[in-house]
Image (tube, rainbow, N blue to C red; front, side, top):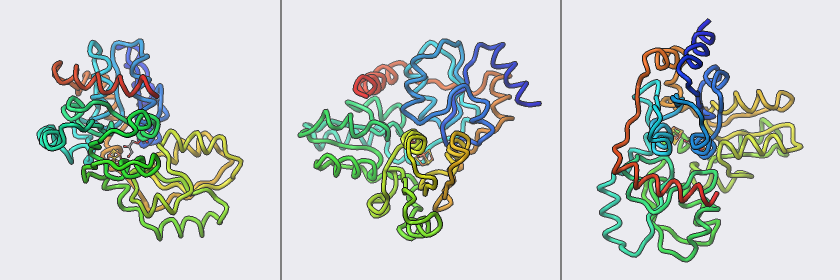
Length: 298
Ligand code: 13P
Ligand code: SF4
């Protein structure tokens, strides 16, 4: 069985397998730890292994490498990227910083290592509000996600200079999907959406949460039915951890990049020690400061 091969290779190489909540169910099942971007970044700092195999997309594996420069970090499919992270380059961010020299530059973790290296601090969807609360009153450049930036600035009563980046997957969600979700699940079913969704969708939902936040919310809620407005991979974990509860996904959201990591690619990655993620040390050093500042806050 391929799962046995993966376990054997993992043990032989003293490797640990991390998987994002959007990964294929079978990949989540074999991983040592499954979580959201914040949980995975934290986990990466606690790992006692020689090799980290990151099942997710490139910016996540880069974050693990930045936090563990001496470890081998592998991404089983080198083409698994996040289109939103590619929506701003370091050069574009430098131009923006030159235009607003007094501003603090903040990046969503869904960004390249080079962009992180240009930033004062990083945030994830799981801690953005808490981190940004420490910067209240400051002039802020927020990249690349205009929706997360818009969500947090509104919550904190602030106004940010947001880059116009977005997640093409969550952007598909529309108001009518929320309505259809409520009709299917019942009017008392909580509607959970990701902060990467567009403003009207966020405002029509009951809760705006990171994927880890959704898992926690569902576990602690007394409700029996939930409308889920994020990438479909999360349903595997929600159903597995809450077999008695019912989930109503909306919008048919699937991130092709997150689905690129298959059991076969994971096995090949462990067998051939491929594809190693490298971040030049001068970039990693600056990006590490932005990520560590975030982790020290929440
Ligand atoms: P989370 O940090 O909430 O898991 O989100 C990551 C992501 O890429 C959402 O599209
Ligand atoms: Fe990027 Fe969106 Fe895929 Fe998340 S779901 S990895 S933000 S494209």
